[in-house]
Image (cartoon, rainbow, N blue to C red; front, side, top):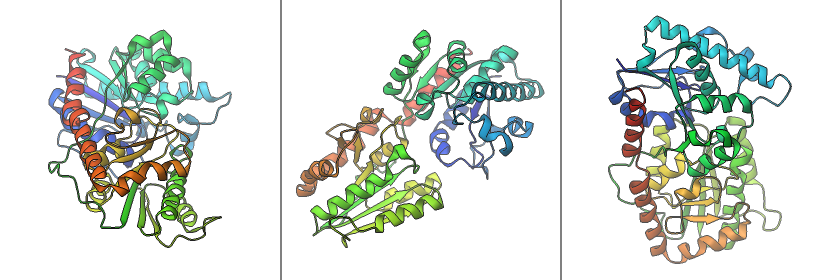
Length: 401
């Protein structure tokens, strides 16, 4: 009997962002493994609905190692300090011990079992310790923060060396890891996540005449620069006073949403209030609701002006629906976006560059329509998760055959 132990940060227990990453591949994993056991490290809330056959083990959560009391100390993004490395090592060792006990209880055969950490972080190092305890081999993905993080570099290098491989979700991420860990560069590869392609591939209708609509979906963190979305689109409203222009942002805590609302309502220091600019903000939403909003909102553009990125899933989902992106040249984003299917701005753009860049698409609607079609086709051709996730699951199974 073949077994897969998939270690997550908290999915399926209340993780919104993680759900969008992991859910699309669960059925493919079930096709390749007799048992797929999710092992979340933390409990963040209500369990997401899961396909029949997917199991969830609370072995780490119930062990008490990642309780709220210790979470700040043990989590990967703790502040640097002399306790960082030993705290990280203790957490990973304790997680491994909890999983080992589960392996024994479930009588899993180490020769037919593969460990899989969805993040190249605590889970990957814990699986290294599990391999030492049980002989179970393991792999890891690497996305964005877990590519850039500088926590416990020696432990992560050891985990990389002992693994069957670490697969970054973008070529940019793989290259960054190779630069960071040149001694184990041969263990680093790329495996795109992709996104689900909607059955109805027709490009949705754009906004009505003299109207423009933008959507963004991300955490509200400094590197995402959600405030730039407000600033840049407001500049467009100044340049196009005859257009009604709206921005919808999805994601963020209640406090962050209130701050963004206040920022959007502030008068511009030069131009004052733009009555033709409206912004609305929603907090963190379930993934299906995000997709419904994208489908039904008649959005002309997806906007993401980050300083760093992995390969943004929400951006690719918008593209698959025929919503072309306006992005900055950050991380792996340009592996999915080029001048045919979106607008790529410099990493540190000015509002004027955004206004100039989007003007030809406003003045020539046919150009926007062509961009929307190319955007959808790019995802369908190169980032179709129905193909990519199946190939990934088959590859994982082959590691224990």
